[in-house]
Length: 189
Length: 189
DNA sequence: GCAAAGCATTGCGCCAGGTCAACGTTTTCA
DNA sequence: TGAAAACGTTGACCTGGCGCAATGCTTTGC
Image (cartoon, rainbow over all chains, first blue to last red; front, side):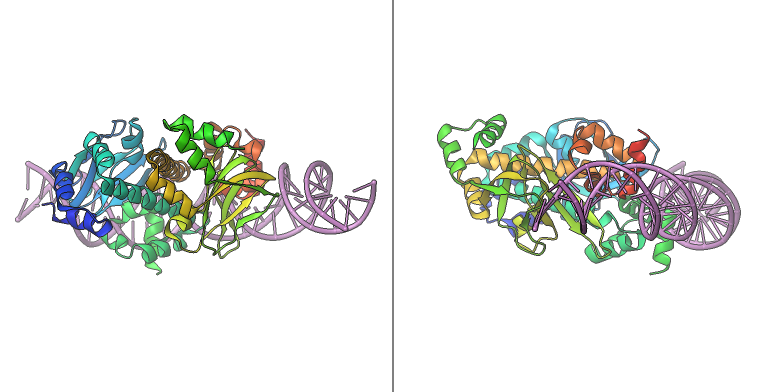
């Protein structure tokens, strides 16, 4: 149940078995159906999730009704509505599974308790933030000034299995394209 | 010289005077002319900067020759080519001042030394990362699916003095618009 | 296992915003 | 201070990608 989480932690920091125990004890296993809502829009996010199996999607819907996907967390990754989780403000996202999923969930309270208490966990959190920041930067970089074809090539280069894993519609909303356009672009690759 | 930095640190964490001393001692004052390059493209970033006066701009140029501005650091803010600084890989950015500037500079080594040694400094770094991540997220959110007018209204709402402070050209490259389009949009506000 | 709903793909017409160019104004630096 | 370069603005034109809608395929849930 915790083996993937342990692998994740061990691969990033030199953490004692005792500390690992303590960390794992804070995570509660959760099963979720396909398309289950983990956080409704406007709620304040209280949990961080680790994906054992399945996938979490974070997305938002603007006034015009257009969906924009911000982030996917796949197997072996962490995900949450970070802005809401950090600032404890109402989320401007929906957080949902897109497949039947098995997750590990930690409360915000326990999470920051671990950050304070276990230096290796603080280090992991710092890494997640650094990586999140870098990824966001690269995405801005990658997307601004790119046309549809370039965007698609960019994801293929950076996340090769992405287009195979998620639906055309969701991929389009992640790339900032309409499903029609993405479909057309894929047709001429 | 260090008063703005001290104000910044004190406003975010409860830090002792001794620790403040130690932090400030790691920062070296730098003067820079207008349009001075702080980091050439492809170099590995070794410094973090705090802006006392002036402004730092981070931007990149894609194959087509189009400039995209990623980030501005104004008075009282921190700025660097974070991906390169963190990962010690060649930067995919140019870092330049856009005005005659007075900066405080800390080396990467000293920076992470402070992060390890002074918990309040680690906390500040965590805050910078969190905020950077949130800002990047909001920018993706704010820009995808928005038309030109909405983008401009968004910056005005979130950074009221932005359009007054930076040139039309740079603002356009930050917003992902052509200078012509930004000019036209501003004309009908 | 089948009806119903959702999804991918593709044709068509349209428009926001890009390019290019012209012109006046501001900035820069010998 | 004055010539040259850079910038902002605006007009004319063009195109990439969107919305809409039709069609066929896949998924889903009772």
